Image 1 (cartoon, rainbow, N blue to C red):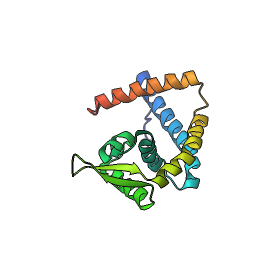
Image 2 (image 1 turned 30 degrees about the vertical axis):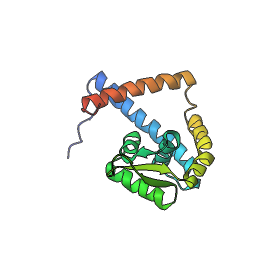
Image 3 (image 1 turned 90 degrees about the vertical axis):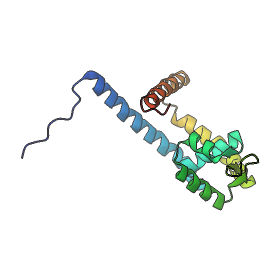
Length: 158
């Protein structure tokens, strides 16, 4: 039996892109695990928090708007909003202009929870990002935005 051939990239551009991909994925996982640990005592997942944060900062939103903001499928947003509704944190409201559309909004209980956990969670995110200076964070955000837009344009999603 022969050993598998090396899958090492043959050109520098591919090798650099692969390295960036791995580093980016590992950084996202490490930051995500650190910030999720902050949410666990409240029984809220990072995706549920993202929904609640969007509603907390923007006010009631159509479910499609929430879906686009947090990048989940339409079935996923329905499932997650159902879970938050069952817990009394989010409610659905009728759209006055379109009977088919529904808004999601925080309930009083949801607002109270966000007032309790949002400042501490924001601090946990700040601490998770403290490996970079504020200037480096701004630069990284700009570069990653450019990367994301270029990748989306290449797949026709921009």
